[in-house]
Structures are given as C-alpha cells and as structure tokens.
Image 1 (tube, rainbow, N blue to C red):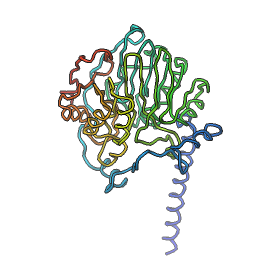
Image 2: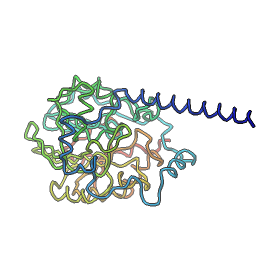
Image 3: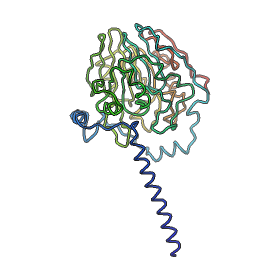
Amino acid sequence: MKSLLKIFKKIMIVLLSLVLLFTLATFLYMRHPKFGKAPSGKRLTLLQQSPNYKDGKFQNIEYTPDLTKGYSMLGIMYDMFFKKHPRRKPIDSLPSVKTDLLNLPIDSNVLVWFGHSSYYLQVEGKRFLIDPVLSGNASPLPGTNKSFKGSDIYSVADLPPIDYLVISHDHYDHLDYETIVALKAKVGKVICGLGVGEHFEHWGFAPEQLIEKDWNEAITLDAGMTLNTVPGRHFSGRGFTRNNTLWLAYVLKTPTLNIFIGGDSGYGTHFEKIGEKFGPFDLAILENGQYNVAWQAIHTLPVEVIKAAKDLKAKRIFPVHSSKFMLAMHQWDEPLNEVSRLNDGEIPLVTPMIGEVVRLDDEKQTFTQWWKGIK
C-alpha cells in the first residue's frame, strides 16, 4: 500500500510540475508584443464613457450568444477534432493575378483583394488598406493556421504608401502583428475602434496617427470623403479578455461612390438600419466564410449575406472572409458556391481572384467562378 502511495505521489508531482511549466510558458509567451496591450489610462477612461460599454466590456446592440442554443463548446471541439470534414483546405494552389500596386494610376478607383478580409482600396486619389494579414498565418501560434497555397502572393513590399489603414477589429485574422509592424513606415493614419489604438501604440505607432471611434461617428477624410463608423454583431479580444476593444463596420462615401466595409458580423437588425440611413450602396463588402450554425450570431451564413445585401440596398456584393484560412468546418469553396447559388444572379457578385483588379466605377464588370475545379 505504501509503495502505491509513493507512486501516486510521484505521478501527482510530475503532473503538477507539467501544469506549472505549461502555465509559466504560456505566461511568458503571452508577453510577446503580438498579443497587443489592453486599453489603459486615458484611453480606458474614454472607452468606459461609451454607451456601448457596459459591465466592463463592449456589448452588441442585440442579444448575441457565443454559441447557438443547443450547442456546446465541448461538442464543437469534438466535432472539429474527431469527425471528418473533407476539403477544409484546397490541395491545389489557388489561382491569382499579381497586379502591380506600386504603379496603379492614382486616379483609378479600384479594389484589389488579398484573400480572406484583406484588400486594397484606391478611391478618389486616396489609398486605403483594410485588415491586412500578409504574414501567412492567422494565429498567434506560428504555423498553426497557415494560408492556403497560392493565396500569399503579396507582401508589404508590394504596397504603395497607405493614406488610411482601416481596421475592423483586433482578431488575429484581421489585425496581424507581423504585417502591421512591417507597414509602419508606409502608413499615414490608422482608423480603428475604441481601444484598438492601444495595440498600435504598443507596436510603435504615434498617437497622432490614430483615429479611434465609437459606433455612429463620422470621420472627414481628404478629397471630400467621409468615413462613418457603424455597428457590427461580433466580438473582440487578443488574449483571454474579450470585448475590451470595439469592433466596427464602415461606410465610405466619396463624391462618386458609396461603399459598405463590413468587417465581421452576424446577421441582425443593424443591416436594415444602416441601409435606411446610408444606402443604397454601390458595393457592399460582406463577410461570407468561416461560418457555422453553431456560431450563427457572430458570423453570417450565405443565405444571410444575401439578406444583409438587400437590407443595405446594395447594387453589388463582394463576399469576403474566405479562400485563405481554415477557421471553420465547411469545405473551403462552400462560401463562394453557396452565395452564388442562393443569389442566383439577382444581385451582381464581385468575385475576383486574389490580386485581380476590381473596377469600382464599372458596375458591368464580370468575374469568373475561379474556384471551380480546384481540388
């Protein structure tokens, strides 16, 4: 009996030591600057005054559960790791076009997509960069969520000087430390939600570069352009603390164009309200990918993308948030297949290959279903 107790004690000591070692390693690793910094000081005081900040965190306008009723995190983890989900990532390399961004005529109104939710916008002579993730990884852990083959044809060196770096929220697949640090010398102003500026200051950006906004605010830009901040239905956070920074969508209004920049969002009443106030839109850029019925409140399903576009009174839909990273259980090409099938030609879809030029002034521009036939 005594020998069994000794063995048990040794096992417990080993297990406790491993737990302590893992805890210490996690603590030390999370001190890396890529995890950003929580809002503090004057910035924290300011965001605490927001009508959207309650009980120590930002809140969605309508009730937004992390998981749909009837689902559990344990069940989702079991499904993800122990059940088969074929074709979550392509075997083949994705097709692309390497447009020379450094020599695009500055008077052309264009969009160039980099996959997922990253894209370059050039409007009225101003250059915008939205949620750039060009490091090849959508996770704070190296090599754990690598981009699909062929989807990483652009680097920071391929980008011209950026007038406005626009960030929807601080999740790793939208705010990428490696990309942001490499971009520092090329960026004029950073536009983001309340609290997100703390990450940028921590990474060496000057306070005067940062424009942090709440929902329903207007930013006057150069060349007669306005950027309005509007709500999404999502969440935020880079460490273990959630919703200590604000997630945003945007309305970019120029003398000739009206563009909805959606960020991440579940479907909700906010789309109709935005459409009534700011629509119709020449182009609605809407999240369409990495969805699941289990987390439907925070990511739109393809059928809801069409509903949101109609609520916004969009003339064209650009479905993003797909074709680069594996963050859900659906097949990698399902988002584009489903949104195309459900839309059935009703609203023109903008579906460029990565790097292909989208002409924002050309409503009749057509696109191939480039994802067809890729294994």
